[in-house]
Image (tube, rainbow, N blue to C red; front, side, top):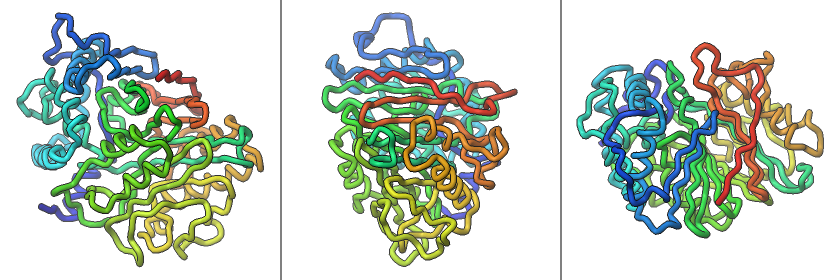
Length: 438
């Protein structure tokens, strides 16, 4: 089954850019009786974010862990269901047509989820109602799956990532900064439930930075220091979802099992897997960083799924002002760069200007870059306050999360957008240390 490009963009841009899951809790089927999996799950309010721990070392099944996770969210996170429901209503522009369209897309993709993650989601959803009704203040089972699959169902984001390593890094090891820009809801619904989720599973332990209840990977890293982050890369190609998989859940599995960044790249570029949205996967470990360009639809002379390195040949549309040309560093915005892939970079100021800003600001930092300087690059705005992406501002009015990460040491710092409708963003972001214990 296919829908036209027009229908896809109608779903994507329903008045505002569409992004991902979130909410703020309360309600649902959670009771007060003790649950056997109580010790396997913790949900802790850390102020600017929730710390989630899913401990599979305790021996519980994915369904049991998911069930306990859902139960604790509903009794711990205030207004969770009502916030998620209102967020969904905004994504669908409060129309039943878009609401039903999104649900049907999610239902198809849901069929292809890995069994372990499907069980985990079903466990969480066991705490929810079954009736689908948009705007009722409750979160249904199908709506919960939709929220987890929004990246595959209806998405338009603007992210950027930058890494340095080797002689360009003061530590000699990889340092990186990652910006996530999502529509957080008119009432900052998602900003109320920023989350760092740690999954403890022996040697396959990993962490994900996203939102409470979100079980696909937007940004994450494992205990071996393999880092990955997703970036959309729209080409205007026709949207198709029949037989498609969720790339954020496939990325979670790839990072969970990876010993090196190449393992994630090899897994995620598998041509046998169909995805709904062209995308990038930014990859890093302690030695270097690379970008997987998953370009499988759209115009180009050699559209393909390939890994970009700092020395890769790029499309000829790049003039010297846009070409990267900085050794032992690599960057990504929401565009393909490799020779032959769709050029959705040069014609679009949002991509070309941010790319240029990252290169300019990195050069200004000098030959040896510190963590402080790298965070300053990620915080760049020409106005001295949250700015405009089309003008090359990296810290913009849409910024939801900013991360600084060192794969070698697993050092993580974060800036999270706050749930204030009046003033959700300060003039300059402040990063805070986020301890992650595996």
